[in-house]
Length: 92
Image (cartoon, rainbow, N blue to C red; front, side, top):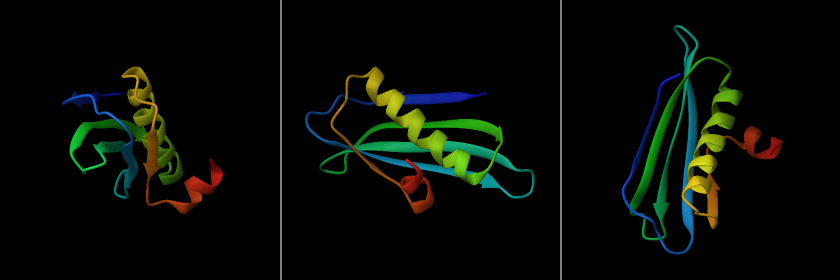
């Protein structure tokens, strides 16, 4: 798997984790990605990971997990997760 991560700065207060996963229909290749922003919508961290072949549901879950692990590694624990999959949010 290929991973990439960029860090700009550490925020104070609540951060917003916007997670996403997507699957390309032609070959079922999936990626998990996301961005973390501060309360003023300023960019803090962006990440993405190539997942290989998996379902859309799994890609969305990986998007959340990768982002939360990244935030925990940096000591950020006041997080609001935002995403576009009600199915995944209900499963969590």
